[in-house]
Length: 264
Image 1 (tube, rainbow, N blue to C red):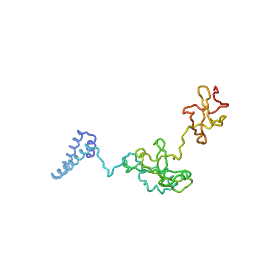
Image 2 (tube, rainbow, N blue to C red; image 1 turned 60 degrees about the horizontal axis):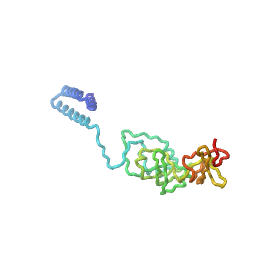
Image 3 (cartoon, helix red, strand yellow; image 1 turned 180 degrees about the horizontal axis):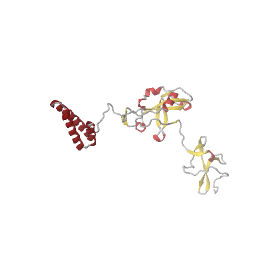
Image 4 (tube, rainbow, N blue to C red; image 1 turned 30 degrees about the vertical axis):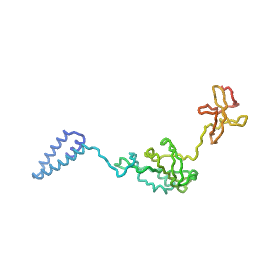
């Protein structure tokens, strides 16, 4: 109808069309009314609506005030209704089902406001790793490319073991801004750290004095460099050395290697 056309013209800023439609509305008011009082009432009503529409056209944005201060994020995914309390006693099987769910973003929602700086992370953990955790203690977690620093997190709860897995709730009061947009994200538990140089198992030799060593290619010769094996892993060693340097070209395969041998 003409009222809707008038509203559209106001939004579009087409004031020439606004004037034409207003004239049509006035004509309708006069021709459809039965008395002077009815004409005046309809005209006043149209003027009031026109005034409101003009104000709306001039003010297309408005401030929205929150009752509390917090961190605002436009990342809304429908999981906001999940409370921290409901996670504390979640069994491993329940968490596994929950992780498979997909939730829709609520309609007419532009963002969310997060209060406080403490956040929680719940994860399915293998029973062997879970046995190394204690409620109230801290654990180190790595979130890969999403956060490139190690996070120290508090262990809030550990569920009973189901099918070799348990659910563990962690909490943290740092890095809120960095993880605010994350939802389902894998993390790595770090129990120990090793410092040294990683070398292939096949590259380790034992010299005539019984010392471990590797051979590296220097120019066209094999050069022996002594190392100390610090940690033995399945496919490699972690070694320390005052002679071996990062970037040395280690000879992995070769027979009858000795210091100074000319390489083809």
